Amino acid sequence: MDTVTTPAVLILLGPPGAGKGTQARMLEERFGLIQLSTGDLLRAAVAAGTPAGLAAKTVMEAGGLVSDEIVLAILQDRMAEPDVTAGVILDGFPRTAGQAAALDALLAASGQKVTAAVSLDVDDEAMIARVAGRFTCAACGEGYHDSFKQPAVAGCCDKCGGVAFKRRADDTAETARARLDAYHAQTAPLIAHYRGMGVLRSVDAMDSIDTVASALGSIVEDVSA
Ligand code: AP5
Image 1 (cartoon, rainbow, N blue to C red):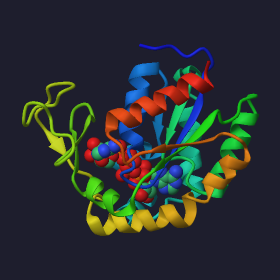
Image 2: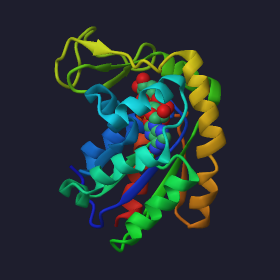
Image 3: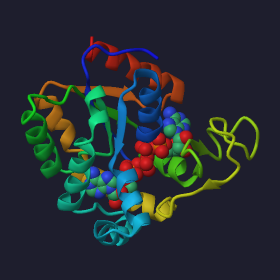
């Protein structure tokens, strides 16, 4: 594992299918940073049937954004856990101006700030295809795709050997379009916020998974040296 000398707070910004989750897991393995995915945290709340999960379920199924109140409560709980001191990759958060302001305030309270916000630049139509073909290992969560990333041995997870796979309920072409619309309306404006803070980086996320990973790895090394 490569080590970072300064714990980073790295944000991955990008529409559904841009590769935020794929890349966050790779950075986690390579640098020991912790992936914090608000999508994963919300899906766990839905599966557990918590009040937050019940409130989020319908919104997620329609491809809209869950309220800032619910998302911030879930994220703050996770940020309070001790492992995050190693540095974090925020995957799918922040997604609104309110979430970005709340994150800046949360970090400032402990003398921290966003180290880098990376915009994963992609083509909208390609994103629909990526999302609609996605599946994951039911045991370890490793991500795959019908066209772009099949397991090396069909039906067997490369990472853990699991043989059961699952698809997300919101990974239909119709819902992906609604999620894309929400991204452009509410999340893409954050690119200007982070440019203004002087921490914005961009990566061409239409490149292969390994090429994108290499570009992101260079950014992590650069900002945490
Ligand atoms: P979330 O789970 O965050 O979904 P998303 O942002 O729509 O992003 P995805 O997980 O669909 O895509 P990704 O960018 O991670 O791509 P991936 O790496 O999987 O959120 C789900 C819902 O929760 C939201 O719609 C909302 O309702 C709610 N929510 C979550 N956070 C919220 C917040 N902060 N505020 C409010 N609501 C919130 O890659 C996709 C596929 O493409 C994979 O199969 C992968 O193998 C493949 N792939 C990846 N990279 C490449 C590449 N370079 N080339 C070819 N294939 C690739």
